[in-house]
Image 1 (cartoon, one colour):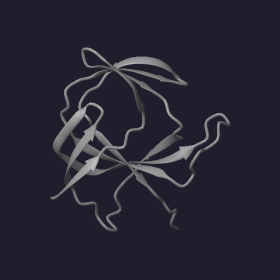
Image 2: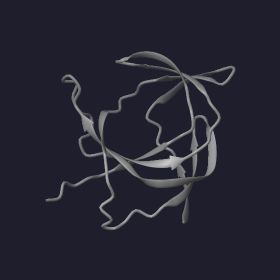
Image 3: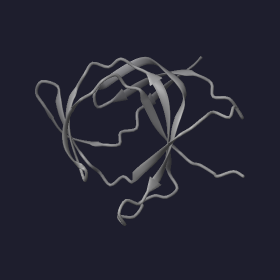
Image 4: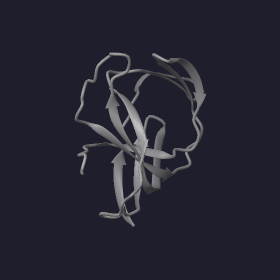
Length: 132
């Protein structure tokens, strides 16, 4: 397996850190995305690799990137428009084991208080072309 160091893409901005591992996040000007399950057609076949990831919750070394999982297209929700129709997200299943963190999220669908579990996806910026 190839080993790579990656800084994880953060889709939510950090608003404030509070005591007892509580982190509050707020939305940013990113697009909405609709994600599709994908299957590797092996042209070429995806090669598993090991990465080190750092995000707002800390660093994890030696995570295995297992397989492609989702392709996410920017989407217009209720006429709000699309900021960037070119950039997409490609998400891969990973094996991770971060300690739980309590977060509060706020977005147009509501406010939630959540506890994270092990990371299971790594989403990277991507481009896509529809092929016949």
